[in-house]
Image (cartoon, rainbow, N blue to C red; front, side):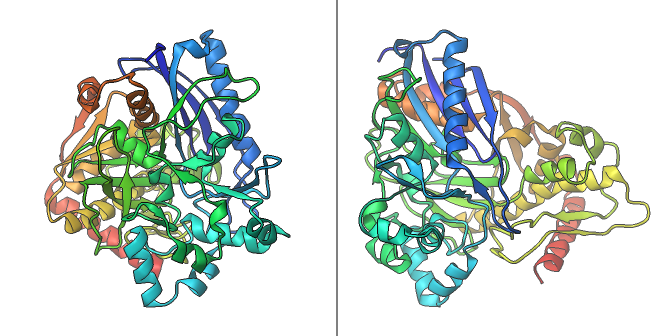
Amino acid sequence: MSGQYVVALDQGTTSSRAVLIDHQGRMVDFVQRPFQQIYPQPGWVEHNPQEILFSQLGSLTELLARHNLTERQIAAIGIDNQRETTIVWDPSTGQPIANAIVWQCRRTEPIINELCGTPDVRRRIQEKTGLLPDPYFSASKIRWLLDNVPGARERAEAGELYFGTVDSYLIWVLTGGMVHATDPTNASRTMLYNIHQMCWDQELLDLFGIPASMMPEVRPSASPFGETSYPGVPAGIPICGVAGDQQAALFGQCCFRAGQAKNTYGTGCFLLMHTGDKPARSTHELVTTIAASAPGVGHTEYALEGSVFVGGAVMQWIRDELGLIHSAAESEMLAECVPDTGGVYIVPAFTGMGAPYWKPNARGTITGITRGTNRSHIVRAAVESMAYQVADLAHAMEADAGKRMEVLNADGGAAQNRFLLQFQSDILRCQIHRPLNTETTALGAAYLAGLACGFWEDTGELSELRTKDLVFTPQMSEDRANALMAGWADAVRRTIL
């Protein structure tokens, strides 16, 4: 091992960041660049793959230049990425054939209804992939591109097109087109990967009409993925760690053992519980997915996951579309200006509802408005909506696991909101731990890369680096918490009717 730092490329839904992390697990510095969100039609969400690429490469080169770092000072690069988002490109030119279809996009619902409409097909998909058939995952997005981009199917069947989630596209570009690969955590989000046999599933590829030649090689999350070889980026830096953002956050929270759980309060909310080397099949509408593993574990590790499509994005909505706040930070102050929401509930089903409801046609509602409802009530209801949705996931996860959740580790941008985390603790009736470094997604990618290259010795060393910032414990009465959850359940019923 050589080098003083590990760099995490944290490629998210709304921005790309390069994060410099030292041997103590501290975030020394980061550079962040946003990119455009494209909404061609209601329910459609796209990104320009070139904008993703240049925002990520630009943040990396700016970070290295800011600290006068050479390739010799960087031990490795780790990548975490928005999952499910689908890019198809021509490897002979490097050009994507269309905009990326983002994980939030609902355009492929007719494909899911057509191909996965029978109980037998749905059962087979869940058995093989751990997922519930939904437009959220990559399979139907690939199918849509092959069916709707002129000439795409013919080129794919001739072996002239590659598919990748965003990690694969970045790896391919950074290695100068030498490596077309992904890791199991990202592969497990495509609805095409058999999480028991650990391979692309030919039956599912045939179901969706996707040529196997498009698919990337699947390598362990903490393993070599090639070296940098791209103009403007220092050459020869090993890429050693890759994970989907939510599994990266689970790893960054040092949830290495069965029963440990984290929730990321990002654009969406994502609750994951480590389940060890046994895939736990959910009976409460959660999904089974693959967890990122340290080198040398010797077996596949799994997690239960529940996904909320609109988490922190509800704060962007009340800021940008309603103009009720000027910044996300202002929401905490306004939420605390009133003792409660006055009976107002916001169910932010802007792109349908994810787990545990899986209602793609649901649309957002605001209920309980009276003449006395003011700005603070609406803002507080928006903040509380994140906590309610996470509580729904946690209750489903507790039912699947057969035990109560005693501690929930929190991270993500909205975890800076203390009101949110206290309210979460109140309605969940458990402790919420927020670490000193809430950027655990980038930290997880760095940890995977650092373990693979010897920058850190083992997960025991990583656990010793972890420090807690705040611990939130329930302050509200249980009766009050139950009454609030009952009101939320009623608002959800009105939304999904």
